[in-house]
Amino acid sequence: MAAASPGGEGARRGRGDGRRWGGGVAGRLLWVGAGRVRLRGGVGAVWSEPGPASAVVGVCDVLGGRCWSGVSGMKAAQQLMKVFVTRRIPKDGLQVLSESGICNIQQWDSDEPVPKEELLKGVAGAHGLYCMLSDKIDHEVLQAAGPNLKVISTLSVGFDHLSIDEIKKRGIRVGYTPDVLTDATAELTVALLLATSRRLMEAAEEVKNGGWITWKPLWMCGYGLSGSTVGIVGLGRIGLAIARRLKPFGVKKFLYTGRQPRPEAASQIQGEYVPLSALAEESDFVVISCSFSPQTKDMCNADLFSKMKKTAIFINTSRGAVVNQDDLYHALSSGQIAAAGLDVTVPEPLPTDHPLLSLKNCVILPHIGSATYATRNTMSVLTANNLLAGLKGEQMPSELKL
Image 1 (cartoon, rainbow, N blue to C red):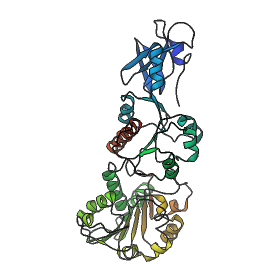
Image 2: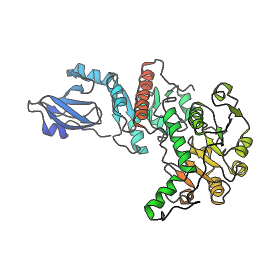
Image 3: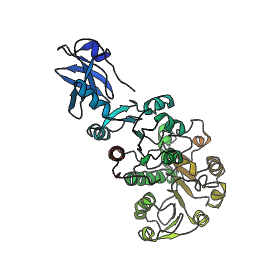
Image 4: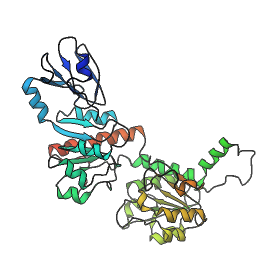
C-alpha cells in the first residue's frame, strides 16, 4: 500500500503556514499548497501542527470534502470501518466508498495482483474486503482478517476464488456482480466465435508475415453460422444473451442443455432441450456458458470431444476448469474437432509455452469477457455498493446467498 506518514514527503514539504502534512488515509501525497491536498489513488491525508512530529491532530477526506481536527477528529477517524481494496479500480467505484463517510480505505495501488504477503497485511483488522476474481480468499486470508470482517465484495460474477464454506462458518456476507456483465460477455463470445470459425487471427497474421500473395479459392476458408446448429451449454442470462445475438446470423437450430429445462428462456430462441451427448453430436458450434461447480469440472473432456463433428467449433467463455485442456489439445491437434476459442483457461494467465498456444486452430484471449469501459465501471460501483450495504447491515443490491 502506498501511504505517507508524518515526517514523510508531505511533512518535508510543509504547507507554508506551520502545519505539516503526512500520511494518506489511502494513497500517496503528491503536492500540497494553498490549503489543498492532492492524492494519487487515495482519498485523505493527516496533518500536524508545529511541534513534535508525532502530534497528529487532524484527518481530511479530500474526495468526500470532510475534515476532522483535534482529538475529536482522530476519534472520528478511528470510528471509520477499515476497507481493504486489493487493486486499482475505476474511479467511480472508489468515489462511492470515499463519499460514504464510513470507510477508512486502504488500497493496493497497482494494476497487478496484490502479493499474498501484502494481502494478508492489508486485510488484517478489516471490516470489509473489496476483491477481484484473481484474489484467492482462503482460510489463511480469513484468519489474517480476524473477527472484524463483515463483508467480502468481489468485482466479478464468479465466486470460485472464495472459500465459501469458510466464509459461511464465519457469518461473513458476500456481494458479487451478476447481470451487469451479461451484454459485454455475450458480445465477446460472439466475437470470439466468429474470430475462431472464420480464422481471423490466422488471416491477420498472414497479412503481417507475407503469406498473403494472391487470392486463392480455398485459402483461409472457415465455417459460417448461416444454416447451422448451435448448442448452448448453460442457458442462463449470458447463454440466452449469446443465443439472441447469434440468431440474426441465420442459425437454423438452437440446442441447449443444463441442470433442467428452461422453457421460458428457450422460447425466445426456439431452443430445444437435449442431453449433453446429443448436443455434442448434432451441433456445428458448441458454446460453453455454464457456471463452475464440482459437477461441471472437466465436463468438456475426451468423451465430449469424441462425440463432436470434425467440423465443429468449440467456444468457452465461462470458466477454464470446465474444460480438460489436455483432452482439448488432443482433439484439436488430431483433427477430432475443427477449432476452439477460449476466453478462460487454467491457470490464468496461461504459460506462454502451453501446448494450446502452439496451435493455429486455437484462439485464446486473456479473460476479457466483461472488458468494456462502461461494464467495468458499473461493476466497480455495484461492488462498492454491495460492500457498503454489508458494512451497514442493509440489503445488498446483489448478494450471494450462502
